[in-house]
Length: 230
Image 1 (cartoon, rainbow, N blue to C red):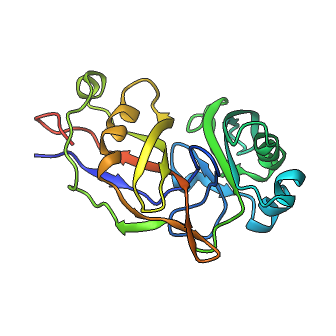
Image 2 (image 1 turned 90 degrees about the horizontal axis):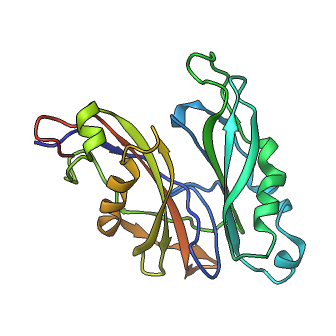
């Protein structure tokens, strides 16, 4: 018997060469991840993201992306943002994302619900794809089974994780890295990585052609059931 599992639509960030970030199946070029997707209040528009495209990269039509870790206050304002990933390195995409950081916001919450210092992750890509990545087969509850980590099984925990994967021109995911976990250090990222080879996606298109892309895939895990599997 499997525990409940939900896979939500995700942002994408390329993991090498040309790099981009976009919501799977949606046109937004910027995304914000926190304990709950429902807590997201705002993110930069595509026009705002494109206006922040580093000048040299824009002149050369160089594709790029960045991911940063920030802290969210009970007011919803983000601060202390630190770049954790930018592709390609040295092209200014990390700095561009930090310049956009004030445009990301969480919904206000009581401090008991969102303590000061709550970690969130922001991402953006340049340019926005004409046709963003989408699910070839969208996962649903019960599609996967894996053994819960000891910390999750002993604590009977629920949680959320986001992984960043390279998405090839044929829609295959590889080079996946965990970029967010809540609660941290319990193994939800480890469990999510096990599912990466089985996800079926359509590639992103720019000017009608598939491009190498990346995908930030968030998954919400319910607590494990008696045999400690999902």
